[in-house]
Image 1 (cartoon, one colour):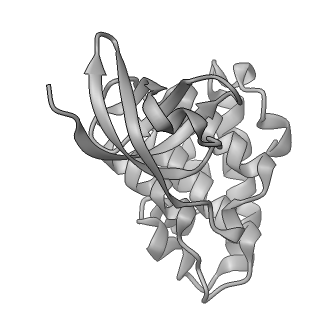
Image 2 (cartoon, rainbow, N blue to C red; image 1 turned 180 degrees about the vertical axis):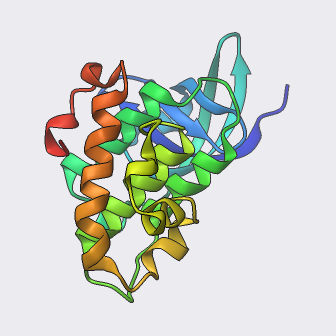
Image 3 (spheres, rainbow, N blue to C red; image 1 turned 30 degrees about the vertical axis):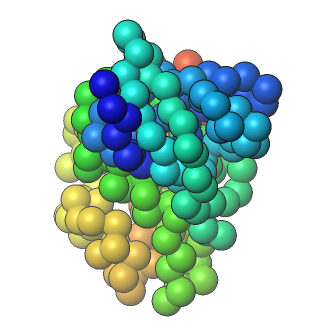
Length: 195
């Protein structure tokens, strides 16, 4: 079978190991191993890459890897980025095309020049991410209609909202409730940064 050109986000990688976990734009989360000259690359979690993908049983092999982008400045803090990658690894179905999630995670590489409020960008991203994963309090009617409407919008719309300061506190509370209601949230290693 011929390899196909593909794009993905590195969710998990261990230095010196040929095995990585990718969120592929067409195949969802896949286990892959590097082959050929790609073995000499320094593979970093969170990078957006282009590669040739070839199925190999339950895994995929990838070759001809090229870096496309590193996370933008607003998304680059290690605590935030590792949390997003861990949530994706833990809650996005493996081997299931999750195009909406993939394209949301691609927003991590986009600089938002019209705002310098990186905290608002990160909160907006997490709210939208959890909303798309259907990970939120069932009784989210306790939150304002404005917030419920905002988190149902694409990230671009959310960050263009001019009520940043009014929304931040309620977004933090909403995220806190998300963590409190999910029965598996305690298994995440990075939640201490956000609750």
